Every structure is written in structure tokens, then in C-alpha cells.
Length: 282
Image (cartoon, rainbow, N blue to C red; front, top):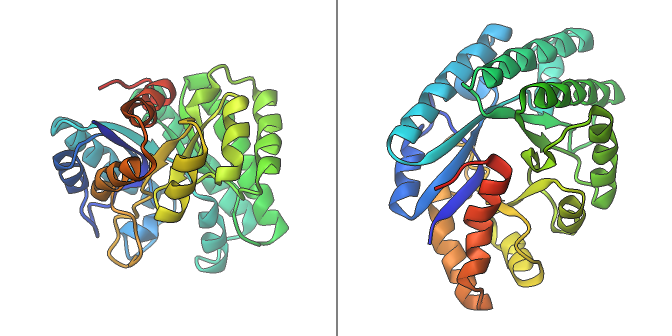
């Protein structure tokens, strides 16, 4: 059986970098999606747009190395909603300056996507915690512009959202329908709640669920194989409680035995759904 990690992170400056893929491959992994972190996860100083650009350059290089060792790799870069709060609270930027920076970053990323250097844009979306209303507005504007780029350049999109159950799905569906994206399977609800998965699938989108025992036990026992699995591994030693990509295969194998899941079920999650969403095959 082949295993996939549909949403992870990579940090060659402070973490393992592409060696994640080496470990993943040695444990049965065939595909991984590396999504950008934030500049302060990489660097000790912040230099505006140039810090984002430098971070993406690092990330793209690591994705190339991952592909070269035989792991199919998708490289995704975005402007995380939490960045907005950090830039205002810690970097002391004004809200409008943060909006302009975010729009510049995703424009740069969309051009890389257009050129085939990046596979998609993400994470973008809305904060999953309470924050000031103008910051949510900034997040929404950046998300809407990202959707336009995804439509124009056929980019994948990884969304980080408030995950307020089915309401979130229907609210986002309203925004996406205004943009008229043709291939909705390339729009991914990252870290989706199990209660959202059926509606996400029914509306034609893709989803990833967090690979912790509590979530996996529920979705594997109760739901059809309509989702993908993610580690959301931060690749940063400052994070102590994490899911390691290379541990997902053994975890899924054990749970498959526990719930008497068929090989077809696991194949659907780890291969077919990747092919459908990412258009990447083993």
C-alpha cells in the first residue's frame, strides 16, 4: 500500500527540510504536499516582502529535492491568516499595509504557479480564533484575490478557515461560485472538521483531515473515503506535539486492521483522492 500526506510544511533552515520525504518514503510514502510556513518560522529578522520571497525560494528548492528522491511533491505557498495578526501586533504594521503586503505576496505566488514553479496557493483563508473584525476583512480580501488567481492560472488552493461546521462550507461555496472556478476538487478545505466532510464532498470540493488518533478513529470508522489525510507537520523543533508524516503509514495500517477496512478504502484515500485533487499519479 502507498501512503500520502496531503498537507505538511517544510523548513530547511530550522527543521529537517526534504529529509522529511526521505523518512516518509522509507515508510511507504509516495506523495506529500509541502505548504509554506511564515517568514519568522525561518528567519530571526523580518524584511517585508523580501522575507516571504526568500522563504518561498527555500521551499521551492526543498520541493525539488523531494521530487528528485522519488516522492511526488506538490509545492504550495500562501499568506496565512495568522500572519495578519502577527504583522499588526508584533511587527507593528498598519492594517492597510498588511493588506497590501498580502496581495503582493499572493500575486508573486500566483505568477510562480502560472510558470509551473509552484503547484498552488495556500494557506489562505480566515482566522480560526477570535480577532479584530478588520483583520478578518483583510483575510477575506486576500482569499478572494487568491480564488481569482486560482481560476485564472488553474492553481490549487489550500484554505485555512474558522471551521464552523457546515456553515463555513456554505459560506465559502458562495464566495467560490462568484469567482466561477471550474475544477472545485483543486480547492482544499485544510484541517476540516469531520462534521464538514460530507457537505464539502457533495459540493465538489476536497478536504484534508488532521492525522491525530481522535480524528482518524472517527472518520475511518464512520465515513466513506471522501477525504485525504494530513500531518500538518510544522518542521520546526519549537513545536513539541506534532504528527510526523513518516508515522502516518503505520498509524493508518493499524487503524485499518482495527476497523477491518478494505485495501480499496485505503487506496481511495491515499491514491485516488490525491489523483482527483492534485492531478498527480504514482
